[in-house]
Image 1 (cartoon, rainbow, N blue to C red):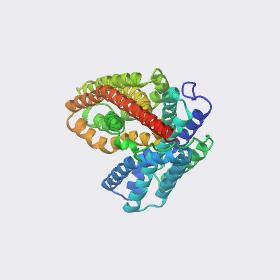
Image 2: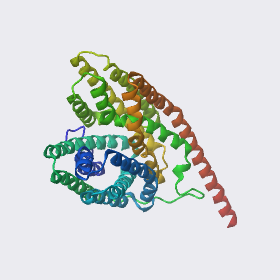
Image 3: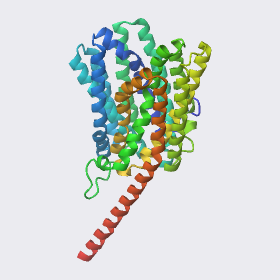
Image 4: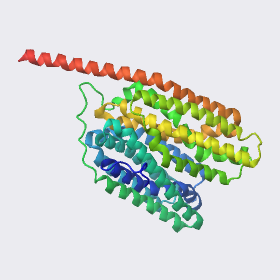
Length: 422
């Protein structure tokens, strides 16, 4: 890998190797799975969509208790177990031939994936200093995109052959990739378990942390940019512009290469809540500009001008994406108690399945049906969420400081009582 992509030696590099191993399989899986279940298994698009919606909805809820499990039992062992569970769920797809087993396997896959993401974040928090976490996450994101790009190319070969054997080979590859991911994670040192709950502290404290919940909700809104290039922009290009259809693939490749090459550089300087909030705010402004540019592509311009406008919109979009990612990573760690990183990361990460579940319907309604006004409304929504992040973060910081002062006061009172009893 280029120097800016290769993470520092030690735990960050091992985490990147684990990320690369399963992203290769996932890249192939993402581009082939829908066609396999439709053409080979014989499921209808409605059945596939319903199963995936239910699965990711359950996965978004399961992330918190599985993150709490990582806190209590240790993040390394939990991450390894969930990586193996994900591999097993993918392997079960090899034998599924009807809807109900597909629904069950899809739910297991989504639950294990959401839990694995939370456990990995808790593992990173235990092995990397707070000041270095965002930079390491930027390296991991670059690794993820590189792996997905290579995996998607492998999946393209399966699509070219378009046989049952080719599709099954992709599922086998993805299953083995998660097995390899688990084995790589075993190379990391053990992270101590959480010290446990404080007196009177609920088991899933994050569910009562309203300021953190507001930040998580705002981040989920910002994550609506995730289905843009995979769903909304392709439909927009085909139905609303004069651009050739190959532009869709070119924009996707542009996004993957940009994140791979520049995510680490974009994360530099994000080292605390203030810089993170500022970066998220900038991402909202750039995302509004991107939406306006994409809307302009439907102005009936010559084909080459339309293509140039779409590329400009995609460039702005990926810059906003990288800034939003860097800022949100920093906030998700800075505002979480050190002994509950797993459950807090599981809760914060629920924005991803929520965006995957609600994003397609919302974006197709806004952009494909409403057209230009829909793009401008989407840009306004994303800008509003990014601007609201600042006040939400300041409120969360005040609430956390008050909680720490209260805990310290109770500890002092308890100490005086023990001393008096003696």
